Image (cartoon, rainbow, N blue to C red):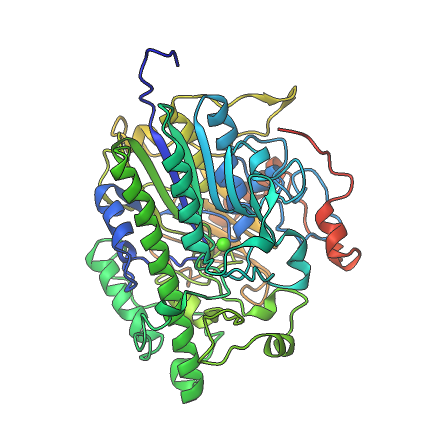
Length: 552
Ligand SMILES: [Ca+2]
């Protein structure tokens, strides 16, 4: 841009929630107070057919690069590599150098680039956010951590990347005593945007670690939802379903999802267990409201700076609600969690506690979808998406377009008016998987972004899926699947309850061929039976010995 021409390119604010369920937010039928996100939804458009990966890091890799996770370095989520996958191309662990990030492209095009929040795409030199296009960074580099200043790792294996990075410095040991993740990320982003007085547009990436476990909020918010969940699972699920129907988000004929049956029903729990379950959900709800409040603080600053009107805002959750208890994070055990944390009702949600919502609430949080995070059933991969901003002409709820998380990259580049480079240091980039939404969002074209013959593939932890037209093919491993291919008609059965694999053999074969083509195209490597983490220490694993160190 020349010095005399005003730069009118839009600012971009990309906001990610971590492990938030499909219907937790008000604009998706939730009872959790989220007025700011409701406001963004009212000012723009929300989608009900948007898919991401079933896990955090693979979604983030696709979000920032536009490339399938099996080609971007997150073919599997570290440290869960099978021995035959470790350090293989596309399975490197950090976001690899076959891709460029949105920040790298926009920084080269003169954008100011800021990040606050969870990275999860590499903690080693050459792979941290300030080395992938972000000019100012306050980032949690790993996958999850306690939300207070103790910065406690989820398990001993997670320690090597459980680190806060501020512009390249490890600041994990110097967090202020009143540190709380969502507040701190918004504070940092607000300070970067306040100092930014130039004419150049910005790209800001605000990646909350809420409501990822451990469920924690500042003390004065612990009782904000007190008593709200005493009625149990169905007392939340039913009203959510009704609100989703009345707003037109789901078909009015859809009956209540009975759930997987894997977890005890509310009336099978003792009074003590019910109190404990209700308390978990109270804290989870408070975390989400606090996230909403902090989105509001950032948006409030943009309004004050008169930059809101020229800011494209994209909000999404990285995957469905999380069913796992704290001992899921190997090598944790229930006994060790009990010994090392105080999870009493009085302490739950405070520093020194570690609880999750668990499977039964995760199913409620994903109403009306089935299953949850870690699976490629809809409850794992279908997530909320809200978009507002200049040139976004669409309004209301869009149930027609099938969108994928890799689409965000070309969409943002399209709005910013720049192209993706074809190579990096002389090496061609991995192919883009996503498609731009700009023609649709701006009202230039109502053409389907994906037509009935366009398939989209998914795989994580050997849970495989293909979406094509109204159909879904899924292969899920136990305990959530039966180790065989299931076929669902999502138009008539969005909850994936009636397996049509035997009734529709031709459709089954067609989608299986799509899966084979997808697996070949992205270089999928089926996991062998041994785990790399059983052969090396966590420190050695996360150093990724032999991985090329390339400066950005
Ligand atoms: Ca997540």
